[in-house]
Length: 421
Image 1 (tube, rainbow, N blue to C red):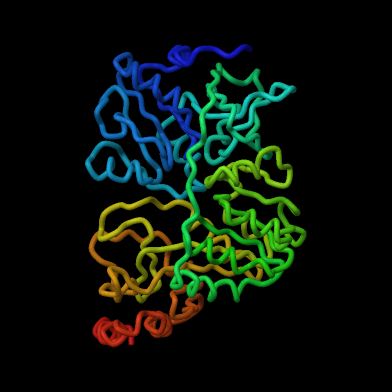
Image 2: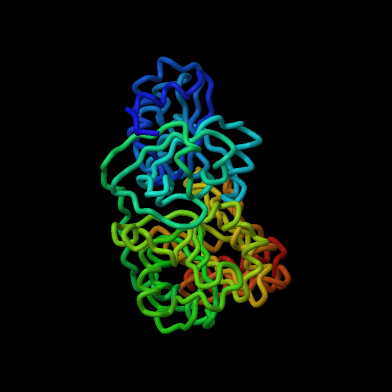
């Protein structure tokens, strides 16, 4: 099958199609441009996607009802579009997105970016596997091959005979620069890093605190990586010899992720690198699969924690900021892991110290992302609160102890009023 013009994708889009698009750089920009330019052909087409990186008119509701967007995790691009009413947000744990799509949308087509076919006729979905690869063999794929997309290994391969069509582009991938950690970030990170043993398998996201944690693990030995997101910080650990994966149970010696996002450095690192495998999120984020690893360490950030230990990680002041993502998946997986540990990290305050992120009760509209019964450790710059297996009184005392000193007395007073102490 030879490549075609992008417009040929229109032959595969019904008037009321539900279309799956990968997250981040897995989006095929030229194909989505084509859909937007021809939206008058449609009646009620919906694109389903997590964490979109390209800002587009249809995200803001300007092409409704012909073309609309359903998000499963808000990005800096889709967050304002959602708040202005331009798109729908469907809550779902990352591990469950494929099942949610099958039950709630009945998708009929996947549009995805890919690396050019190899000499055997196989495309690689490049930086993505996520929920998209789960549909290989189930529904048609139309691919946009990009000469600058890395060819990755794992379970994100699709043969030319299985695609409805493909086109060719040559464009740079969007890059996300690592955030430089502040002294506060390093203080939080140090509490986590000192609790991660040699031979542990780690999951860590993107951001200043995760970067600081990774930087503090260079002296460790035989770490494994099993994470939804693979970013630049992991490369330093591999090159330092800290990551070998020999102590892993699942996919021993392999760095496992479900998508890649960072700078060109990480895209070059994963290109044709057999030590890195991308697997569908149904496997990577499956708590039962995670629990097979001994000494699994899950590290995720949150925005607010109450004295029960409930973590509100997707809303800010009662308004949606992101989505559920994989936080609950990995927190529960760490519970199942022999000698596993789950860490939820956050600065103790916001707004220059005026607002405590440790609160007696979550504010109105705040959504619980990780349940109190699942949370293991909560970490701020002031220390670590061990919660799993503790009473409500013990939880409140531990959390107040890691709140900022300026807010502790008020928190104790509120805890007594609530009957926690």
